[in-house]
Image (tube, rainbow over all chains, first blue to last red; front, side, top):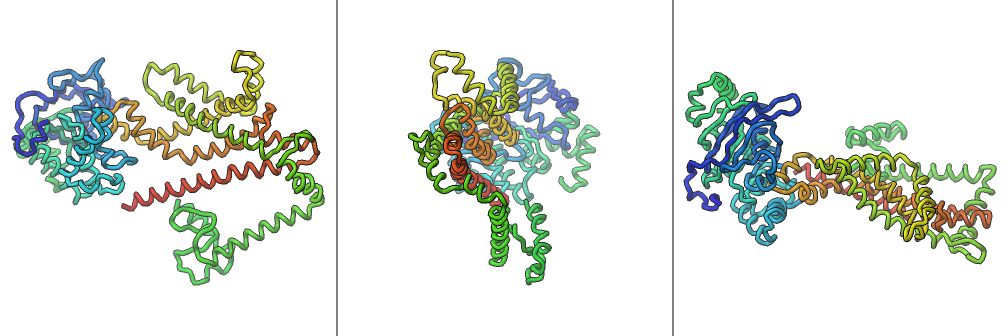
Length: 262
Length: 318
């Protein structure tokens, strides 16, 4: 796993395509949320998805993790198609970690059990080894003393960091982050963003839906602007944030600037 | 919770005139249904005065009921027929030579039927609930069967199910299953009927766990079954323990219906005593024995509800 090199490995895409999405359509009832999305993320690349609420960012991530069945389109993971019949979704999901806006920790389990459940039950790691690895991860993200606490004893920032650790414990090759700081009090945002920065520095391939424009500008190699279920503009952050080409991107960014969030 | 507490506290000063002037702060309303922030209780806080008032009013009510009972024209007759100490004792210990059974011994059959039925119901109902909650196309016929099953056994009176199984199965004259003790047919009928109810309780519990928990579990690569087993079900069961225990209190009493088959359980033993000796104090004995069984379970249920609420409050304050 590339992450284990810590910050030593440069976070530079190596040219291979980690995930490729083509012509993705997804409707919830009569409401078409994704209207033909094409997107590709290279290995070690960090791509941020920005756009107003309801633009389809979350749905795109959930489709990429096969949590939502898609209506049309194809998704490849390192060149292997993961959509269509006869795909072992559980196997696919082992390689893709996802972290949700509302943490979704298991409230009836301690932090340690939250983190070790999947490695023990899915990867068949021994409990002792899973716990060792979990403690190492918790330690690394400043949660060393929290292993035996229940989630409702933790702050939002701590819970979200546990959720990230829980996903990392499966040693995923791609991480999908779905507005992971949106539910947090402002003073807790930084501790979670720092964790993501560390992952990026370690070379983790990430697709991040976010409202934190400053963070997107810092961390992303590419930023995609979504509106009404389509990717309107896909460019390096320097380009997209300073001289957006599409009129809709300009309008969105103007609103963000007016709101004082960039 | 707090709203309803307030609602019940409001009439306090009206029922007990003058109490509102007793130097209590404006936000501190006295009342017989006080609250300590741990939810309503029968007798709580508000100090010694509130306790004194509630004790006094309870005594007045009981005294009034006892007076009505004692002063009624037929009181002596009723006391002799239903509360005769000698008959109560005789029916409790039983006397086979005189043709009646011990109610105290017969209650053990109720307890045994209850214990066996409870375990089976928990298992059968869970299977039905899981089948009905499943989304696999292959299981569609089973889902339909589950719906029919629940509709049928919730709709048919338990007494009829007991008759149907208890008289029907022996009448079929099948090897093995037609020559079992009567209590076994009774338990089978109880399981069939109660599993329908309890499966709905399970289903409510499964639905009470937020969908995002499923998403979180599946996103980690857990299979549908593993997610159900370790993530959804434990949370669901936690949410339904009070309604489950409520159903079991009901089940404890309904074991008495098995007596219609001729099994010597407490109610049937009491009936036999009554029709042999022509005194119904035996029913009072049976009632007391049932109360001794159900009240601890009821208090235990309340205790669990209370503990759950305290936990949630504790979680919410962090």
